[in-house]
Length: 165
Image (cartoon, helix red, strand yellow):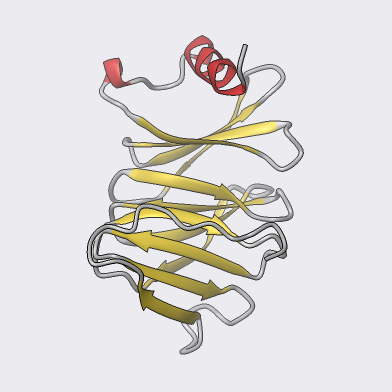
């Protein structure tokens, strides 16, 4: 069984929300150590599952629209989520708390990725823009956006950091 077939079977076996229930699971990611997986869904939540048992570990509400993508932070203790509400949110899994909200795109977000060293995030959106966020700055600081560029004339659906950052 492929990894993605396993994820699909696991999610269905867990009773995870499905399209048939009116909830689309938009993104699924394993934790860096493979012990957990997280889903991002159209019900505006993230759900974290134990990858070995399928038990729901926690639900993270907080976005105002569909959550379309999720990325694990380098330490495996946090998540970054991108939503149609135009925000990237950072989550602390130890507490289940929202720790930071990043705003800067004018379009609908599509994708978020974390750098291997944990200091930056990249987010993409419908207006074609790519933003790289500096997580070492204070929230809301003028240099919170490390840089931005018009990557494409239309939708920029994804962006990834290279393994060496």
